[in-house]
Length: 205
Image (tube, rainbow, N blue to C red; front, side, top):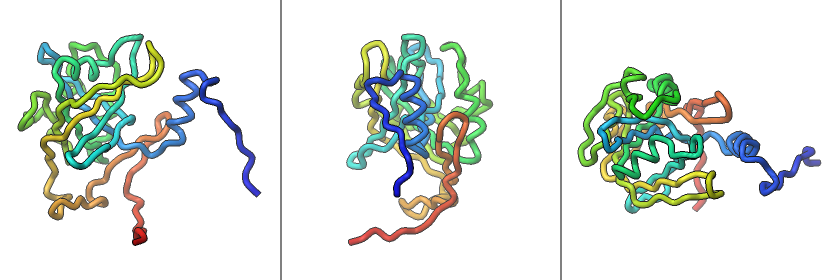
C-alpha cells in the first residue's frame, strides 16, 4: 500500500510555495559559482543552484538567475553587458567562501574581496576565476532565454564552455576522481550535502 500523498496544481501555487516545493524535491543540485564582470570592470561572484550541464558537443552549461526587487541580479546584468562568465566548482574546501558570496551586496562591491578569495585571470574571457577552486570553466554566453511569468520567473543563461581548468590531483586523463573532487550539492533552505557517499552501479547494455 502506497503512502498517503498531497497533490499540488502548480498554476494555483504562489511563487514562494512553488520554490520551496521544487527546491526540496530536486536535490542535490550542483552549484554554479558564477564569476562575471560589469562594464565598469567590477567583478561579481555568486552561487546558483539552478545550474547544470546541458550539452557536451560542444560543452554547454546553463544557470538561471531570478529577479531581485523586480530587476536583474548582478550576474545577469553583467553577462548582458559582457557576455562571458566563469563557473567555479564548489567543493568542501570552498563551500564556506561560496556561502559568503551569497550575501546581498551592492553592485559596486566585489564578492571576491568580500569572501577573501583570490582572483585568477582567465585564458580566453575577461571575468576572473577563483584561484582556490579545484576546477573552473570559462564560458561565452550563447543565449539568454526568459522563462516564466512576465515580471517574474527566471532568465536561463546558456554558455559555451571554451576552457576548462582542473587540478591535477583529481584527474586521471579526462576522468575526474569523484572522491577526491569532494563536490558539494544544494538542498532546500540551509541544507547542503557532500558528494562523497558514492556507490557503483553498472549500466545495462
